[in-house]
Every structure is written in structure tokens, then in C-alpha cells.
Length: 167
Image 1: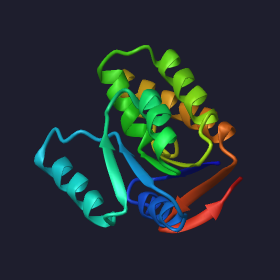
Image 2: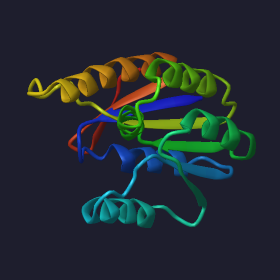
Image 3: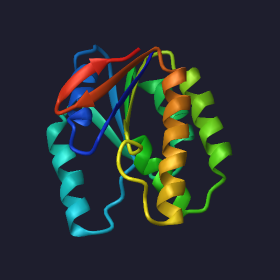
């Protein structure tokens, strides 16, 4: 079963996803897409690591998420992908074929027999960005979020730490 969890920055979406996923039985894999390009991001990553119990095996992969989902789904019953938005950003910066990567991800998540929780940022509710790259990122994020939400059986919107089941 795929559960999609979306919300704004610092909304509590990762914590909520972790709580839901941790409540399930079975081996657990945390699929992290973040890269520590600076000290502040390294501190965020460390904080997320500290929030997870020793029951979690962490896989850090900024780009090859579809392959990682396929691989870990064979050995783990519970997967948590955090986060889709950073993965998209990584793909953009690496100049990957976004359509092919997203299609691969959709194929991979449809084949998961266990539980998969996917966390993403809602970036389309703010102001219109002032530059082309930021507008492209916002638009692509919205498209990817829609595709993943459509593929999910359950979806939550997190606002101010409060989950709202939307699907």
C-alpha cells in the first residue's frame, strides 16, 4: 500500500510519516534523498537520523530512487521515501530525463507489495517565483505530486503538524 504525505516546509510531514510507518510490523527501510551541501543541511539530516530508532535501515540515494525502491521492496516490508521534492531537485540539477525518471518511479511504486510512505513538499501555494528555474521546479513538483498522489491508495495533507486525510 502506498501512502502519500504532503505539506509545507516544517509542517510535520516527515514526523507524521515516520510515526505511521514505525507503527507497522516488519523490517523498515528509510530512503533518504537529501544531500548535505552545507552545514545547515548536514544538521537537518543529522536531526532526521536521530529521530529514527535502530529499527530502521537507512539508504541515502539522491538520484536512483526508482531502482532503490525496487531493491529495498524485496527485503523490507515498510519503506519510507523522504523526500520526493529533494529527489526532483537532485534530478533537475543533474539534468536527468525527468519524465523517464518519474515514470520509472511510478512503475516501481506500483510493484511494492509492502507499505510505502512517500513524503513531499507542497510548493505551489506560495508566491510565483521570480526566476525561470524556480518556476520550472514549482510546476514540475506539482505535476509529480499529482502523479504520485494518484498512484497512492492513501494521502494526507499536513498543516501546522495536523494531518488531514485527503484520500
